[in-house]
Length: 355
Image (cartoon, rainbow, N blue to C red; front, side):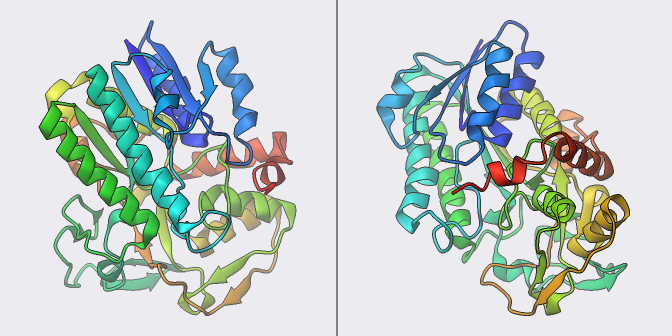
């Protein structure tokens, strides 16, 4: 088997490559990365040490993909993953669409020409901002949590967001490019017989993550706290009560392996997240950091940004039932892994924010 991974030197792409190399014995695994994300070069040596080939290439350029030759499966982990992509930071709105949607189109053409299957890594941010801002929530232990007696919209319950949750916009430029990528992937699959697996991932988190204030928040918060960098609770009255769940990339790789091995039963759209057992608010994360590194003051800013939502927890019940899959890495071990990685690489935050 030959597996191609796009965005191979990113956090998710590199972890997926290393994991799949262990899970598919004898598989040839190679990929491309355009190395635009600060810190990506740091992953190149460990991929090479594992015998994995990564080439410089950009999914926006079809000929870069063509140079990879054939493939049985492609895992598309290349994206600009920030919900503020295109409206803040260094990427323009056109670049976001080109990276996240045009890139998917080129990957699909690559798969069509080679008869390869596609695992498209999508996101929880395809779900409607309006729906998420109307959820019945209460505050408990410094976190927004479900009101069990509230009225829940279709596709959402106290267990989290299911695949039936509304994807009606607005969802951010980032979310829109991912829901559009999903739609075109489904159509290519139907028209050309391409096996298509779409995993809508919650927050992925682990030791080598390139955390920023707008993406990879668990990693960013832990490292910034340990370094004494300024931290601020944004929106929601500056309380830090907004809650997210975390998924370790090894658990995502476990799911992808099961989906690929399942054949036609593995195709379709699936939620992948840590769920309520792996959920935590920013305020609770601060408590964890204070216990680990010592207390400090967090600033407050009441201004609510355009796509901020109070609660995103993924309900992966369908994936659990279909593949007998359950995340095995809990939230506390994920945070411990991030803290230990920071201890060994205190320069990591600066390295990955060098632009």
